[in-house]
Image (cartoon, rainbow, N blue to C red):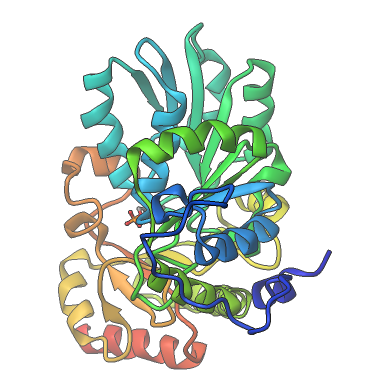
Length: 376
Ligand SMILES: *Cc1c(COP(=O)(O)O)cnc(C)c1O
């Protein structure tokens, strides 16, 4: 057993090279071999190298990497759910996951309900006889609300229900849901695991027993990943702990500075003592509270002008990379929701979501302060 910093760097594999050679062959000899080697069988050395690392980091027995986070999530959901089943989802999950459920589940006669994170304490009362799966995500997007994973897994276990969590925002460096009783952990690797805004992939980590079930469906759905991307992912993972530690400490500094700024009316960051779920976050997140935070300008009409005045922080979609990026959820990630739905989830058009990178924290703070000074 090594620390996460060490596990990020080393593969613990006996091979001559320090890095896994890139294996691109799709035609492979089969006579005399036990296993059919093929990318869609999820069994190339490049796929296995990343899975091995992710299993050690997430404290799971088995895993799989996919061509996107959405491929990972849809594969898990359709591995376990069938016609007539019911599943429960946190209301504040990633928009693409909500879209998948609302648009695809009715075609297969799978029932579902969404439950706001604030009402997760009532989870028990939402469970039906045919409830087979509970899916959540913490910290949430864009308000960084926190779901108590131990509490959810306790309710699920009592009712014999499978639990899945999207751990993209927290990363395995900060949060290990399997250790908190969850069955399956999913990631959009496109974000922190890749970390350089240049890779699109997904991953899951779980027990060997559940992986045996998922594997059969994954072969049918075919969301596998190529060797070249795997190689870059393996390289990215070497610096995952370093990056996430820096992103988290930067985010904490920014959250404190933004809180002091009179032009900012609200800051959402689970590391702040005033955050409504701070105590739960402090219990289940280790070594930091992640690199995502959101804030609201007092004068909502100046939001666009503010974005245009930033010199360093890039107004861009996606998140989790080494460069700090910012977006306005109401016109980007959550544009498909009506204004009413956004208000129901607790945020206005003035909300800005910041993905804090690895730059110098004071440079980032100065960039925001200068942009605010420019719009006054
Ligand atoms: C981006 C994202 C996804 C989807 O991942 P893709 O790699 O874009 O398919 C899922 N969950 C969360 C929390 C995300 O941020």
